Length: 97
Image 1 (spheres, helix red, strand yellow):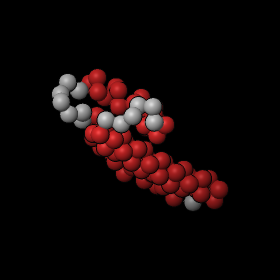
Image 2 (cartoon, helix red, strand yellow):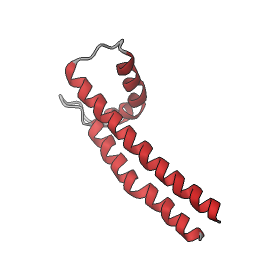
Image 3 (cartoon, rainbow, N blue to C red):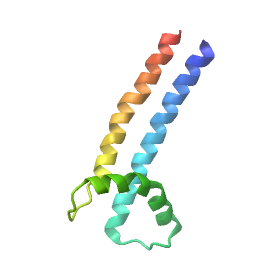
Image 4 (cartoon, rainbow, N blue to C red):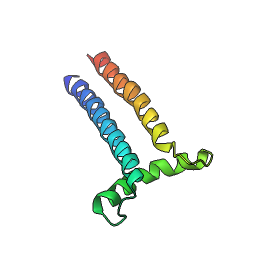
């Protein structure tokens, strides 16, 4: 049971950090969009490739406006997931002991 508990704790920790990193990638992408970046820059291309599959469906659901609120919505969803998923896994890990 010790191994299963530690595995769940590690998965909870990993999910928390991955969500945190993805949130910062979304923030950086939103900030970069304000300055009209070079589309051939490898960093800009990486940011668009990583974030566009998540942002595009949300953009379709929102009404067209001058301001793109999709990054804000994704960040809010990430924050909810960060508060929920790791805690559930940690609680499940403690119940194994």
